Length: 391
Length: 98
Image 1 (cartoon, chains in turn yellow, purple):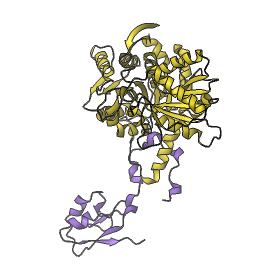
Image 2: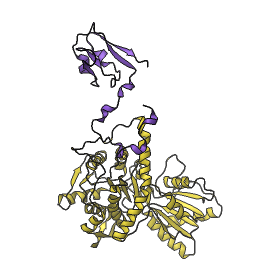
Image 3: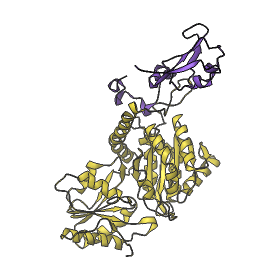
Image 4: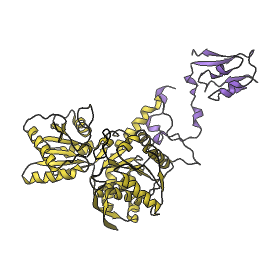
């Protein structure tokens, strides 16, 4: 059974965690993630969710509590944003290396300074290498669905890794959209009870997170690298199972009218929805333009992306964060590195857009496609291009 | 132990957990030592201060000679705290040369 209701994305994500029957929520409120924490607190207080809600004093403590509760075998959820994610930084690496299948909702927001509560991807890009599986949602339904899916993947015994579900702060968190909400039974049929591979228990003591001296540390990092890259298979498989069970399909990389496109834009997150509109308008004028939406960020879907970008003559990559002092934005750098050494790699133009909540209207995407068109005609473009920068 | 004899990546427990309780005693950590304590039994009054102060708990009575303290060299790190604390100055720190 499913019902269709109008829900704010933040509330939908909290409902999803509730439907997954989480055992523990330890989280600290931070704009624009606050409503997720508030709603989960209400669900527990009102008796709708039989879980321990731990009101911690910081995000550092939130994720530390999550590590402990996941280690004893509790299904554990948390949520954060921006400075909160940054404050979790050191614990993020501990959760992944200890293979604790925590699920975290990240309402993507800019990092200070200057203080900015609005949306971009600065927060998540700073945590790129923390060993968590990282996926992006583009709508309330996607954020809801991927939260449920995240528990299934994280707890998959082939995976046993923490998962971050990213969605754009305010643009999604505070937007009310129609969401199909399945009932508890339907979710339970997709998500079996959490059966950890190992746990802290009195009868069979183990030590989690011991010291790893130089003799062993290299091996431990290799194991984690392999675990995250090898999770790609289970990611695709569990997404297929999700589609069969709930009727909504998600893929690590999703193409929109890109099959025969000469000018292709790559976006991550909610911007893809605006970009699709612009692709439609330009297609209607006979232009061969397309969009590739990168949904899975870690593990990076190299092959799927290469297939999706196959025929492009010029590639535009939209980044919503700055790799300060680096060559180009993090997403563009990844794509460029992936194609390094391929003689037929198309020219790549990097657009830095939508920083700190700056709107990226359809006209901006038109400018980006115009730029790609000029590059196709042989004109050089600076890298990266800060879209809308007042010069 | 040579690096090549240490566990391969395939042999590590999930999350590098230690799954066997009290297995730390299998780790012979004494090979970190560059000096070892030696007791002068002429000066030793057998007060046990060295036993109490050893941060490793590796100094004990009767390990070698009956009634006298000595260090279990499989665990002694050579920190010298026993020598520093000894009220009669009977413990000397000797360079490990092997």
